[in-house]
Length: 193
Image (cartoon, rainbow, N blue to C red):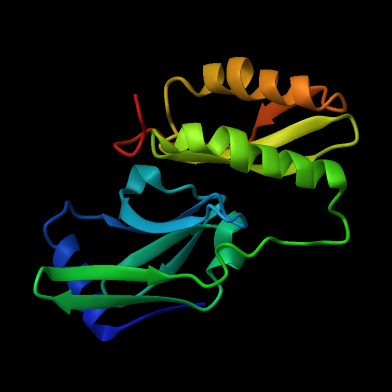
């Protein structure tokens, strides 16, 4: 799924050697499956690992954690080290990050809500390093959302959900009865407070 060049592995090992024991790497995709998709890497401490929803990819001296919901968007991804006169930089290429998943089960409502989140909600959340993704809509009109980035573990997430996102979605989509957050929030340095 993800290939890492030898030079990138050595660089990551070098970076991790300056961190506390147990620090690994997380790969994330903000707004996956949209034209606004952005990939990145960050440090991942033990308390930031979601034992249920994260998948671990082990390399010789470090592990990479990826939330299972974004794995399809990281197909054929590669990590490399680019060196130039300005120094060294890790690059992450994910050719499927912007690929919009189509399934025979997806409805027009799901498509409309995901588009609404991408265009109206995520640009605001991105100001704080976060994003939200539609997980599903059940037969009772309950919308299930998952937050990532700076929204994961943010102390204001309930306010953002109920007074911001739910209010907007219910105003624009009469089919919606409620909005639920299914994120396993992990509080840490990545969160915006």
